Image (cartoon, rainbow, N blue to C red):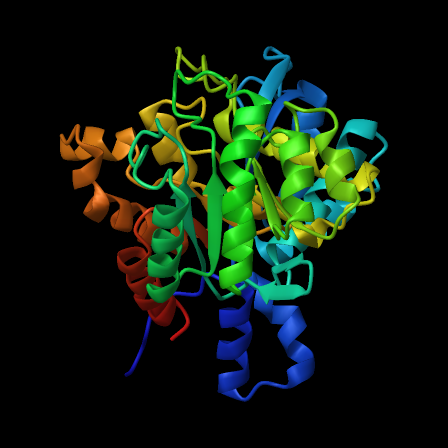
Length: 400
């Protein structure tokens, strides 16, 4: 007897295995979702919603865990944990949409949207004349800080010649995008004056665009800096505030075709690491992402122009950072590629007992490979070659 336990963690892999068997092609869509398991939690359900949700879950062959006294209404509210395969979850969402309670109908719609985003056949990132499918690919963004005080490389590239040399080096090492930043947003940092940021960044953007063909991202949350950078040829605006610090940012972006990296942050760089707390970490970040996409929709900005950055180290404890990385797939419910910016950060040093950022390269590579395997596709790094090579190996294994 020959048996083999398969590792099927995507719809693509499920479909390929079914077709390998020689099954009728028309049967693929019937069977493929049954190979994928899903768990989702609904917070603070009223007892009658929880009981109905459990009942409907059981009718489709799924499981629903609720607080034990909910059935007798001794407990008036309960979180609900649904355990199902993807096929069962789709059927459950359809059943919930027909419920008499508005709460359950809305839950059915939200669940269906999330499932559709999780099983999308592509992950397109589009900016200017570029179209990149990140479903099974990676993108490495090389960091170019033209600052005096960034936590790792502040002062290293704050002259035009040094910035251009570093750009050339990162391109040779395999960078897909160069991300230029003129203001440090390390924990405790203060805002940089607008004129100083423009004076630092615009000459570098001009010269990099003149000398190289690589796409350029500009790391700024100020709409004026974004506007001037786009005029000089910037392809992407990387906003650490998720379009929240400057109310005019969304308007500026709507007038261009540039890409957008929108990051989650809690607080501001000055205060974000002063005892950050969450009741439901993953849920709260997803609600922030939801508000970003609602804003871009309202400004008629196409969703395929938007990348979501989970904001490692921006208003998070060390444990929060690890939980986020372990749950990257949970952020894919919006149907957008996920970016990880963990390069040489202090949570890596905490694990390695290494206070010097210069000695956190191997830890960074480990975090990025783990993040890729968890579902991230875009990586913002100081060290392009080491991370790119490690990620290409992880990609080859994942796509084998």
